[in-house]
Image (cartoon, rainbow, N blue to C red; front, side, top):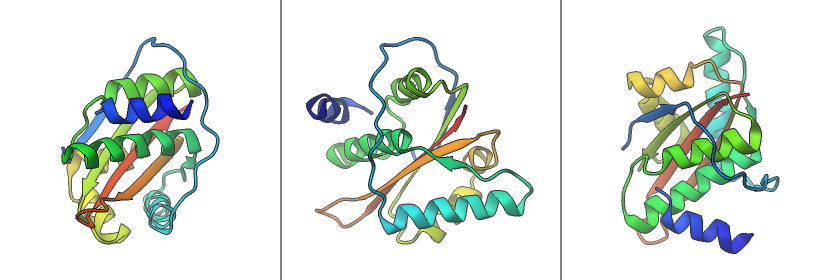
Length: 160
């Protein structure tokens, strides 16, 4: 299974948002283990605090979603890009594995702190729309490029 995950990460694929509805693809196994770093935990906390401050529900984290975010970060680092390549495949996986009805994605690059990343997302209409969207769950990965030291953020929002 790890080999398949690595293979997908190597072949998966702007600093804007993506939202989609999805259809059928092969169902993959549910990923239940994900270890969150401090930046990820802080970013999720800030997103939920913001949502609560504007009268929205807090989102529940799901490890499978964070794993899909991490796969995308590894792809972006490997290919030196910031994009939404293969968002449809990530959405389809999340829909099939978790039963999602709606999936949205924000990506960001080179923000040193969770506060800076969230501020940038909130200043962008598309990103803000995802953060304030009709979602119930989310996942996040913040990965650092070992060569450049720059951080890559992928944040996926899901309605289940």
